Length: 203
Image 1 (tube, one colour):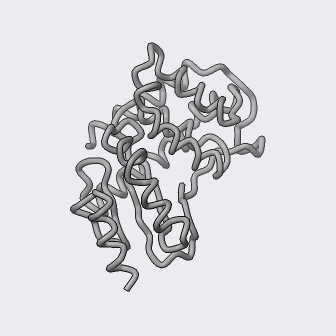
Image 2 (tube, rainbow, N blue to C red; image 1 turned 90 degrees about the vertical axis):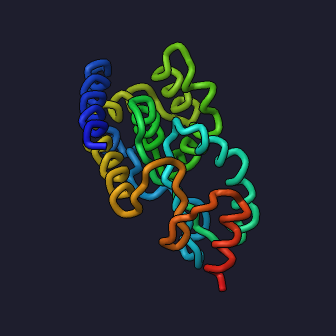
Image 3 (spheres, rainbow, N blue to C red; image 1 turned 180 degrees about the horizontal axis):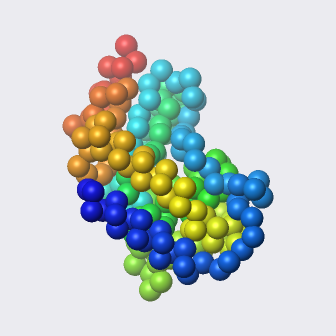
């Protein structure tokens, strides 16, 4: 894990070199980045489900496509669950996608995180993954200069690294996705398994 974080810093530096020089930061221009919780549902919901996910994790992508919609319909939209996605970085492409996902507003972050998870096969295996990642950002209202500044923003990258380290230390995470229901790590990540934990927490 330590060697991975060293590699992340190298990647951030290399990405910074490729970006064009611009003036001002996205934050100074009032357009991001968003560094709060990427969350769905009522913030006052009685149950909180946290997913530690990598945007390049195939199992995370399957979860987003198959399990999340059922949780959303039965528990999130009904006000019973607040669902939080936290980044758990695994590789350089994951880092780039996570940075772009956080480059805009809270609403844009919510939509882009879901989009990256649901369309992994399209952008991960593109001839130029970074271009494909930035194309998704553009589709969600980000402008090239804004994304270039986010790629160069090492403070943003550090926050994502810290999020990964905190999850690894707090919940002993060794793989993604890791689901946490009201502080308890879920052993069964299926809809049925999560439903059982959620229903128990609601009692």
